[in-house]
Length: 561
Image (cartoon, rainbow, N blue to C red; front, side, top):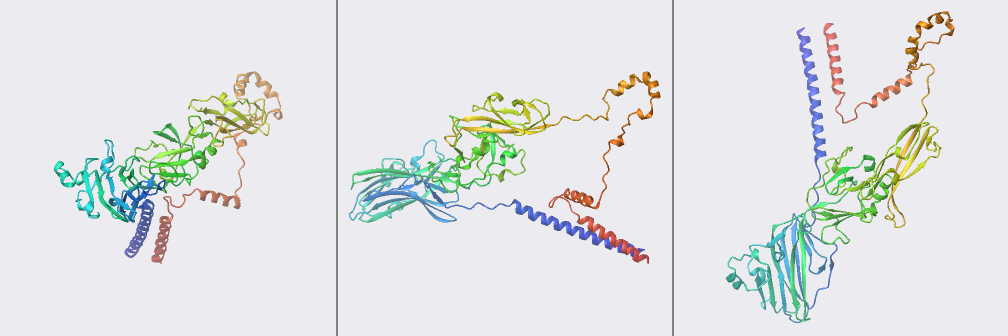
């Protein structure tokens, strides 16, 4: 007996060990899968400096010219900006960039000495009372920074602002608290040798940056005079700091506005399913000008522009009762603009009502605002019932966002089977009703009106048949009241004249014999209701328990022999 109990304890220990090992294995597997699902690839860092694709180079003034530009470094290496030699030029400085440096160049392209007369401006000069970005010259400069690369025949003067210009000794005498970070302007004049060029490079320090405003810019600039041509010029070069945000990809999210710019409501799932994925109709404009071409991706503070005419969204949703937003003349808007200014996003807390997908599965940064112009509903009638256009009309919205009545909407009945006759349902079947409202006489196609429609289905059912085997609801009461008067007459009548009684058993459905074929189908249907892979269920514990019970039974029989 003791030996049998010992064997039982050993078997129980083995079973518990197996179950514990399986539980640990499943736990580890789940952890690994969850970690993989939670991890996201980091966004690739762009170049340290990105130029405005709308910038176009212009010919330099000759024989003497002036130029200002920037360089910076990040993980992708050294990058050089566009310069003052560009129309619509500019620079985005990536937030990962270091070693930001301003370069000011004087070039003599002639074979004779020339006399430059130029004032180069640092970002401090352009700071206003509302400036949100402040960039200054580095504090560790010296006069050698300005003079070492110049010819000995050239001189440099300085000013904390736009003037007067002074040599360094006079500057320190009049501004004893002067620091290099206070420098606003420096001037260069003198004689520059033939076919020569000099560049003064000044490291910059960003004391304050505003990455979320396209207007949060700083400037380099110059104002120079060309004695050889007796001409002068002044140019600036804007730049700002920004974070790379990537691109818009995935399905557009559609919403209706409860209050434009503040609160939005998700459209029903069937309307959301109509929206396309973002594509080439999306452009990114991270500088002042939105003229094409735009950048290849979005940066903080930049603008996203969606060309709605290319998406075909307006045409797609028009037959489902929705329109895009309207212009002042009621025509559909052709572009939606979005500014990534870092402000609070519109309230979309209820944006996922009815959806199982997470918000980040839709295209980021944008949402397509629609107007729910026409709302209709399906209905059911019986043969003989009247039908009117108001039966299936729910609500409407005119161009001023005021309610529409059914009388303001065009109604078209599509009844190929002639279910209706004089607005009365004369037979069973179905027909459809399309409600239409013209938003504007023109749309994206100038020769076609902008019309919103929505269609409802009316199902007509036959009248319910009366069962002759069932008495009217009041027959029991009438029979009770007259039972004493008709008892003698009932007893004299033959049994063949009595109606056949209706029992509950007569109303039961016949029992279906379960054949092999029906049993197989029933088993299959039952199997399909089981949880699918990944749900919290497993047959392993039951299977292992069955094996352990078998081993115990076998051991007992063996010990009893």
